[in-house]
Amino acid sequence: MSITAISADLSLEIRGAVAIIRLTRPAKRNAINDGLVLSLRNVFEGFGPEVKAAVIEGEGEHFCAGLDLSELSERDAVQGMHHSRMWHKALDAVQFGPVPVIAALHGAVVGGGLELASATHIRVADESAFYALPEGSRGIFVGGGGSVRVPRLVGVARMTDMMLTGRVYNAQDGERAGFAQYLVPAGQALNKAIELAEKIAQNAPTTNFALTHVLPRIAEQSADHGLMTEALMAAIAQSAPEAKERVKAFLEGRANKVQKG
Ligand code: 1HE
Image (cartoon, rainbow, N blue to C red; front, side):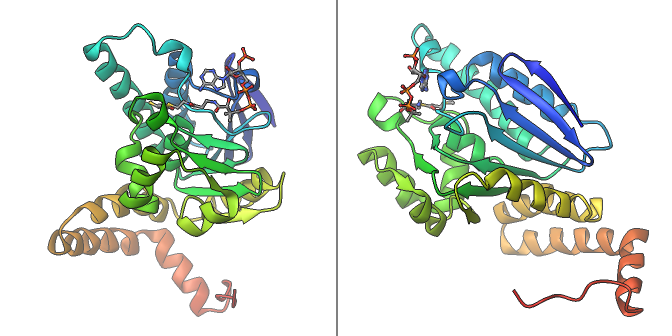
């Protein structure tokens, strides 16, 4: 186990097959400045082959307070567009990187922090988590992919309400709305996220690729194209030697059965 400081505000810990990426700027509630955006992109593009799944979390009382508002002031429209595109590249590196990513959420998951969480594949929240898009009240708009990803989690109507009215979802309501897939007692989000990541790391790589890269594309396609993409992906997955071995193991009674939940 080793923890590497990627920058002053981001660290990387490798635990077996799981990479733990930690926002380490608690004094500023892990607000994301330009340097942190670039570090996030670099770390998600730079995993070695030993990493099979990743977890992202925030140090201190909050997951992430979103964009570092102190850097917002002097940009003109063109610089603003490039700034937003820089976030898009970084969060695309999270969503479409080499491995599934799980967000361990607690405290504030707001603004760009919610955009970051939305770019991950599974969100685990503890009871202290709360979700908001304060961009509305700050006179700005989302710029880190939130208009694309947040409605896919909770719907356009909820996002519109959050931004128009400043509505804040607590952990329970947030889980029901779809911000998180798991709700755990306070302080347990990281442990649960690592437990899930260790399980995911044991999947066939083709399956993990299909779920992180192909499924979201199918969701964008027409039914006709989606079914064709599904057929192609299914054929590739089942023809892999690892799939054949896993199916054989089940048929020979060597693999787990599905257990009632
Ligand atoms: C910050 C930021 C920040 C805290 N940028 N400095 N995001 C927001 O509008 C959320 C703004 N933050 C908050 O509402 C609160 O800070 C929290 C609810 C997250 C946490 O509250 P609390 O009481 O624990 O902390 P605090 O006392 O408000 O903040 C501690 C310090 O962090 C303080 O600085 P200090 O020098 O006075 O100690 C805060 O100023 C600083 N801080 N949040 C800069 N966001 C790609 S586009 C995305 C667009 C957005 O994300 S807009 C939404 C921005």
